[in-house]
Picture (spheres, rainbow, N blue to C red):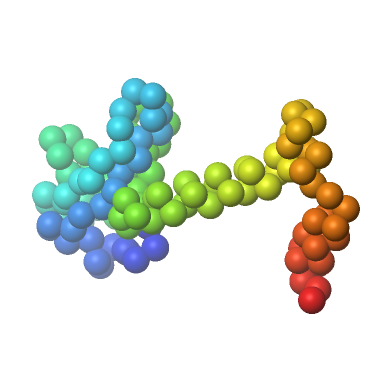
Length: 117
């Protein structure tokens, strides 16, 4: 998501990372702002960003998301992967994954979740 940009910082030449709503049909890509108007910023041939909401105006199904950089997007994806792996330790249907969670590990995890030392 956009953290370092707002209406005033979007200028011609600003580079953002666009992640399409449906990754199966399109690939994430770097975009460069070509023109900035009063209500929209424009990129590519027909792409536009609403400057009030900083979201891509989409004519298709789903709304693409904008990121400050590809590195921010990759870091977010890594966080999601780690969280999913932790969830698997608790509620996976695969017995082998659940068996890796011992009582001692569960006590440590619970202490962390409860902000205890």
